[in-house]
Length: 468
Image (cartoon, rainbow, N blue to C red):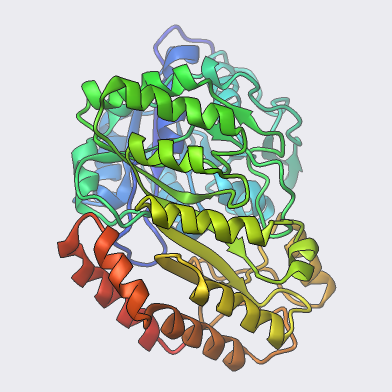
């Protein structure tokens, strides 16, 4: 039924499967909301369940009062239980309005998600244009089954329209709908970077990563797409001037792939005179840095940077197709230390065919580096990744327990080592890495909020003592 009434849409970010102190402004829903308002003329409401005092009671009341035409739910895999709970609540209160799931979990576990009777459609991959087409189709009473990048049911059978196109001109997207959330709420929660205590948010300056690591997602495709430095700076200025944001987490997959563009962004910030804390918790490419980049980063306000190293074995670097230049990376880590930028290294233990010697080599690399911090993850094969297919070919299952983001008692072991041996290796790695007097001194020297070190120390002790 075609109507001229302004369409009403609620976008929900559900709670995590297990309690956590980590909650960041929901960037995906914020982009969806701004696009739906601009391109479809919709009235949009965002509900981020974890930061609402009443949790799902707030959702129930909003559904009754707002009376949406449809509800979108954006979920990561460790929010899967919340995804299904939200869909159930929507159907209970609003009857047969469309419930549309999107985000990483529906994109990679599409069959599982679409098997839930309370979910009508799933958006696969990048969502802004697809959500706009969905909104216009619903507004005009047209079917959705011809839209690219969605899954739906037909006579009980799940159908999937593959995604072939991605947004080429990211500057054409409106900035996230910051006005729909209270940024002040998030300063009271832990953040990925563990640095800063003021009002903050994430920012996305590019999408996708062209490298073909076998364990990685394909949510944004494999063609690197970037916003212009001027467009990025304009958003930062709005966040600074209008919303009082002084701390930003840049959550790109590969911010520094185009080094010239990255330096230009830093130059614009430096020239503006804005005093910012900039963090890169999602990782930068460790062998694609130089001293000029690191110097400009520090002047622009960068205080924290993550580098995904994964393995110190050249053989495994080729196997996983990351092909990181380890010698360049170690030199760049020394440069970040020189400029007082705290650096976190990501490492993965337990790749297929990984030997005990290679595992030890990775731990030694971390211990002898000038990294301030390190995370040692268990290799986990997820649906929709090449590693997931390798696991299946080995007779192993892909990850089914989404309650934790890293090594748990239910991790999938892809090596010939025992589960206990891998757990023990991770525990030894953490102990060896952090019980270093020089590292403790450098952390104390460079950590901006000294008072938070005691809290972080407690987290570290808890990790060491866990029987994993």
